[in-house]
Image (cartoon, rainbow, N blue to C red; front, side, top):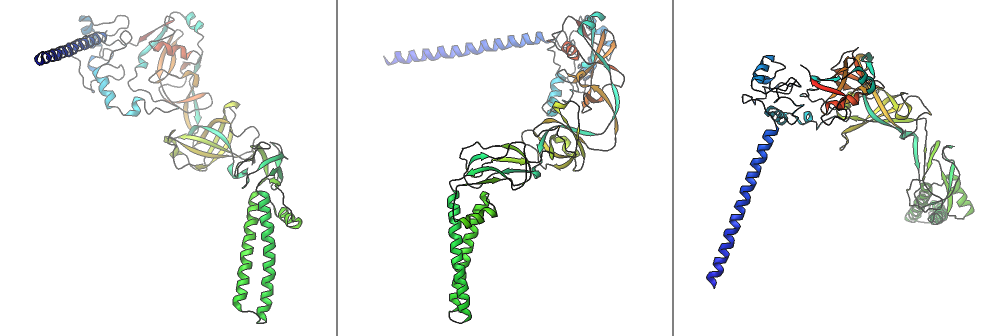
Length: 498
């Protein structure tokens, strides 16, 4: 019986081993088949292809030794082997329009050796860096007819040349001047019985703006009256002891005891008076309490500075803990500009430089300011630094909390610049491009480097010349023709330059 059990267990073990081996073989066969299919889908150059990074034509994204655009003499060799795409005048093994999955060994090596910022991980939130291997300049967009262009609704504008001041542009917000702003609160729990001032109303320092009630106020006032009465008694006792000491009727130790008691009473009175002043009571109110010898839970909330009542934070009848902001008073004519400047631009900014604020809601209107503070650290998440400016002229056209753009002029010397309409620039996946008109029905994408400019224009630092005609309205349509998922396929043809 025992032998039969052992045989049965061995049989099961053998079957399991065979099953595992079979699955492994099938997986290997499947992987081999998949690799074979992938190798057939990606058409690579002839066997003479070099894998060295130095053998690379960045302009046309093919090995330099195999580039027919740079070396036309190679065309006959590719045609002789049947490796030729007649539709695009390129070797079939190089034609990315027909075979978008082509990947050369040099491309993989370049990706591994390139720093992270070149791979797109360090892209600026404003102007992404162009891929140096982008071959967009090699394309040409040809419309079927001029009427097709007219139906597409393309508009053309010239590239401009202008004189600009070197500057840094950043998103910004209008803030209240904190040196002329005060949050009004109390040091005891309170509730607002009634408001005496309305939001937007001008307030003078010391003016009552609300009637308050506090459950702790009667005790504080009672402690003050008690300390005041006790202090007066001890003060009289001290004076009597002074006269007795002069007549040698008491010892010096007895006088010093009376003096210490009077000083303790004075300290207690000062403490209770301090609590009441911190809560918001004035000298006149303290005198009234002492004169009337009465206590009340109600008192006045008074403005600590002169200005405009910006908002009321407390609701009527709601008991609020000590320190809760009740209202905000500020001078709305004294405003700050707070800009969030990119890490690489912070070192160019100094206190005293001129700046301008352009509100998002006010078109191209500009308001002048001056840099008064540059933060000494960067935000951990956004990697930006706060730059604060003060508005040079008061204006009722701006409101605290308004968003816009800040332009900080880093130098007073003007420089010439090339400007292109913002709507003409498109990010097509690896670089910023504009579409230059070569004929009424022919347009060529041009890779450009852009920076901050003026109003509706970008400043172009590379890639285009003044006077060239570029597509403005309709540039997005042309961009789609460059992408393989083009929604405009059929209205025009995209071909590489020869």
